[in-house]
Picture 1 (tube, helix red, strand yellow):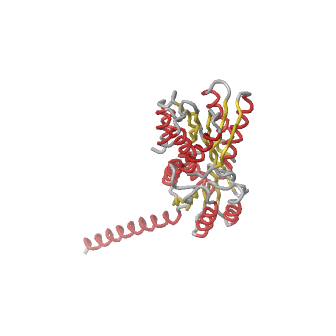
Picture 2: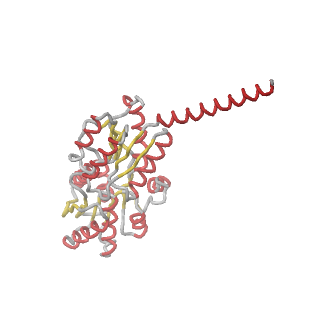
Picture 3: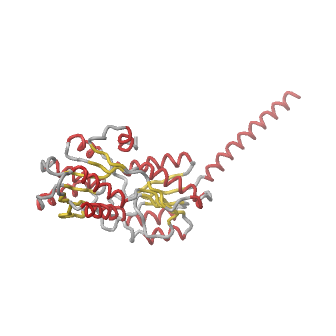
Length: 323
């Protein structure tokens, strides 16, 4: 009889511990904060690196993360619909990179007014609901691109610019930085500029037209990953590697190959992994009552990579942060 009572007690203890464990797991799962990352795109190596950083932070802080973005980096309307959908689905925080500084603002305002904490990464938005901005100092990055060209080309620089959507804040800040630095140098002028779609093939065609119509151009500066890939393809296709000094942005297999083969001369490499990681980490801090300690702006690292430093440890870390 005593043995049966001991067995019953032991069985009861096991059942109790099992229940507590299951209930605890269920409670912890219920307490996981839900964060959504709405990017400009899901296609490029830049955004894959952002997502990898975001997923690492979500795992570290035990958050439920959803990532999404439109098919093209011009489609701000789809971004706005995505913001409304994630708010409706119960997201507590939004990590967002705006395609359009102005036309994305109302959707972000609405999310903030619904109680969603907002973190801006990569490209800003005209909303006072943003708790912090994390990304490149884009004006400084533009000046860095001009610096790479000025150091790489002797004599007069005749420059062609290949930029993307005129409503996107980061591209416009980069171009302003380039133009200011070139003007200050006293030996450079912008001969022509083109605004193209954020697609490598379209950027290739528009860059080729730019170079054919302005044969005096000896420097091309492109302002993000797809435009840089397209510009590199145009320079290579026209066999102008010896005549045109090309400065691009971001890390991509095509442009890294271009550095080694001679038709890309410098890359301004950002830190998208850090943008994703710090974006989600900041969302966690806002949700856990630590928002007062966040800085308004966090500048992630940016550096010039060229053939001279391509194989240095710092350059390799910057180029292949995703891996």
